[in-house]
Length: 393
Ligand SMILES: [Zn+2]
Image (tube, rainbow, N blue to C red):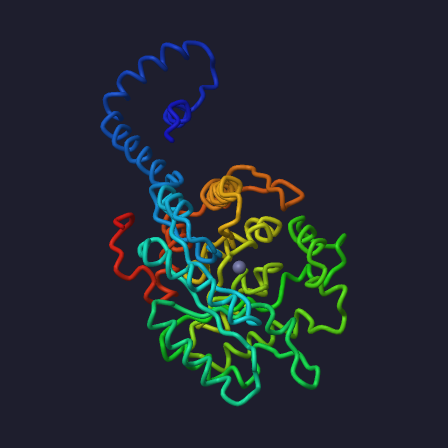
């Protein structure tokens, strides 16, 4: 903003003598006003416009996509709420151990997609039941063909591949197992997306009291089966990341979204290395924004500016038919708005996941648009394709 006092001082440098200063000031100001007004006024208007443009956009004004959620309900309320908030969902089918569970999720995803085609899109999954037996590959490809025809835009590989399943010899089945190659190639040929949730946050390999964010502490306290610090015989974080990287390397024509900041949430430098190495790789931020909030603010901001085309906003929000709707929607609303403040403003903030306060990033509008929806439209081919803009179903 133009500061009149500062301008005055600039035009009228302080006199060495106080005597008669008021009169000189008054006289000069009058005549100078006539000269400067045509200059100052447009400058003021321009500055005011800049301030307005620079000001963070209104939450509801910008169309937004939450690119990683789990909508497991047939009820329409959550969809209506998303529309009110100018949000759309990419809902993800999970779990590789159970065809029946995948099918149940698909039924709900398709039902919501049919009723809200402009507000929800979905990714399917495949089961590794009978993996390694003859016919497994054909069966999986047949089902994926069906899913793509019915409207899926991609496929999710969950963390159970690499952390749960073992082959007959007791070795962990890793995401880069060559028996998955025909499946990955099929997804690439369909111009679909492969979403990988490989591994866990690095905290998972640390004792509870060394974990960097409180949300990880809570999660692993309640899910010790996934707390790798307690399971030393399991693959390391490094081995899992290497297996995921190997898939990217083997399939350069496969578009991959690494869920949860590609499990490299602990270091934007490490994530940057993969984004540099693999042009077919983008990441969502689901449930890992707190890990950005504990890293150096300038470093995180520089990272986002540099990789602004490769990052997608997401929460990992989940809802089921038996969920307490009021509680879930309150939680989601709070998260959306708090994340929005983090990316759009520069204010000092706190989060229940983070020990210390941190400052918002104050990103500019062009970057916000990419993170909040344009990148999802670009990286997830076919998503909301027929959409001009919002809310017409
Ligand atoms: Zn998820």
